[in-house]
Length: 185
Image 1 (cartoon, rainbow, N blue to C red):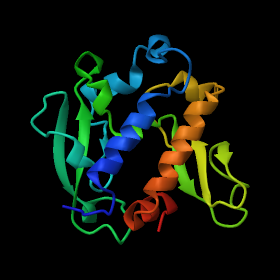
Image 2: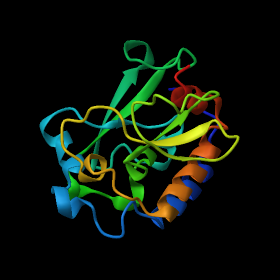
Image 3: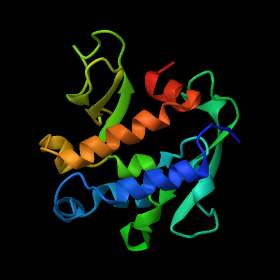
Image 4: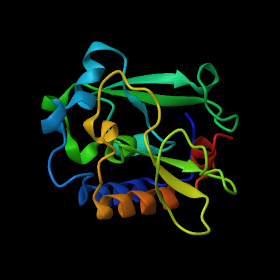
């Protein structure tokens, strides 16, 4: 299993911080029928846990299905050697909201590392970047098999959600493996 430097206690603290914020001031699943939670039921849509994030989860808990996958078979950075966990939600009626993985909690934003003036010509609008930092948050740019109203309209997201998400990723990129993942190295 891929070993990162981020501790279980750090993941728990991150989860607590993200529990206090939401992208919008209402349940966005109400406007789309929880499309991002439903999509995994028909196809193999899910997400990869970050290195070490599996420590805060119980693979026997039935709300997620788990697959162990080799990093060599997928498009991971060269520093990612070994296996990672791909998890798939079994639907909103089974969701253990307090245990949602980080990438679920921070959607519709994607953390990226931008070098120099790379914020020009991005494939998605820049949402937040602190002056002098290479860390940036974009609206999720990758194609999805469903329509997300927050992405489609590029909704104004709650400032506390943006700030908390940025803070979380600032801590996470201290782990070289996570830094490599979001920098595309």
